[in-house]
Length: 216
Image 1 (cartoon, helix red, strand yellow):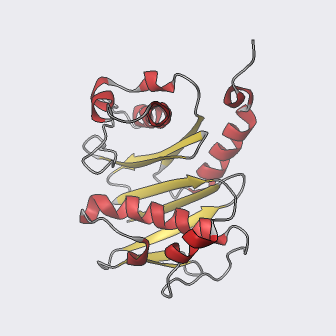
Image 2: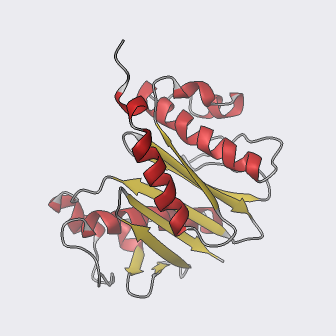
């Protein structure tokens, strides 16, 4: 019997988990999981109902991400670890918890903390590959300060950081943001949204692009 590709790659799962943990400020906990066939089975009843209309591949990825989130919530002492999908696709965390979930084609990640540790957090994961030039032109704005970014993957790092900023700002401001609504200063490790929300940002590019945004 052939082993599904992702089930034969525990090395990348461990490497991403270490890289993500290395980005975490005090108070945050994080985890990673390879997306495997059948991971939709990890969706709890409330979660499954909230994403019922999604296509099978998306449900499988959501199941993997929720499984990571469930483990983080258990570490934080939550009796009910359900994280249903909100009205705009945002995860709805238990009272007293902040968190974020993301996935690429084959890896799911999640971060979580008690709300007393910080106000909000967002995470994103992307392949360590260049962003298509036409998309990079949409993501980058004159307000971004891109000092220190590598030429090859810099556009995708900016994309991932802005995704993380949006995820962190939405629970606080209830505003849908475009790329033009977020200005990132990589030298300062900060970002600001068009509503004036200021967040700390950090990232790594090995073995995947991982971006984190948070506000105290």
